Length: 158
Image (cartoon, rainbow, N blue to C red; front, side):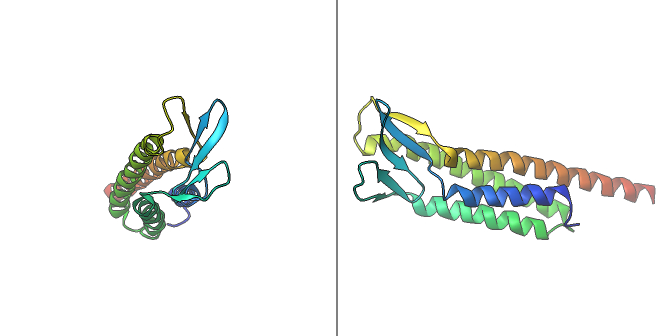
């Protein structure tokens, strides 16, 4: 049934992954002065000069798009709960890959820009949205498992 709670959780996963592309992942500051903002697609200097393209924007945007489409596809597979659980595991792996690649690209960006060791990296909203998506995916999988157990218990009573 499409009106179950896991539908809401999966829609939230799709929305959070889509929103990740619109927010900054991190900012780099030196003595509380903004130097750069890092998004999935670009590195934006605070002085107003031209933005640089991030080197790994294509794999990260493909991962986010795949997670968004898979979570929406999972909603339509409500009659096949085992498939939903398998797709949920794939979404977990993709979100973990995105979070890990984002972390390493943010940490390596200061080295690539040769900013020095005094620069502070502050993670922004865009970095935490996929982490929230993982928690909603967990809740969706838990609700799918409860549905599967309920169906099995009803079938035993027959």
